[in-house]
Image 1: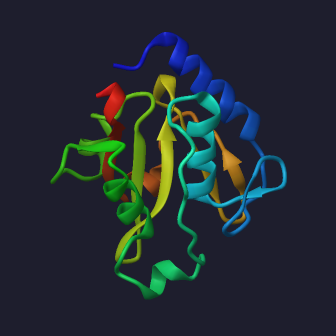
Image 2 (image 1 turned 120 degrees about the vertical axis):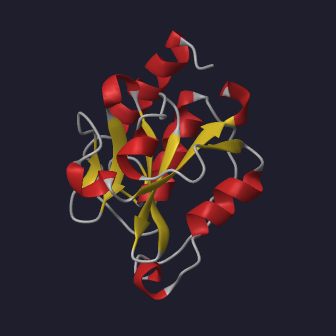
Length: 155
């Protein structure tokens, strides 16, 4: 189970990435980050995960490809366990806890990642908007929620 100190570290790391512009394939705080790179860097900075290689993929990957680089990375890493398999959308979102990684469908597969923070908030990097911390999963994203992964050490 995630501790209050770990949640504070996660939220502090997320806040430090806020308003970083979106930049395909980049993991640079303040300069540019893609969704999965921002998620990974926030986990690394908060100390919830040890640094590990993150796959790169072009932003135009999602409309053309039914395979998810995010799912491949998360499920082959051995660092996460999937929660609520078979559930989607609002039903699945009710299971999310602070520290969980959320996977959202774009076109045919999961091509967007976010982290659940405390108080229902999430942190994610969106093309055209950069790293944002909305108070809850935005309506336009909630119905696309298809996966929750919990860090094994916190499960």
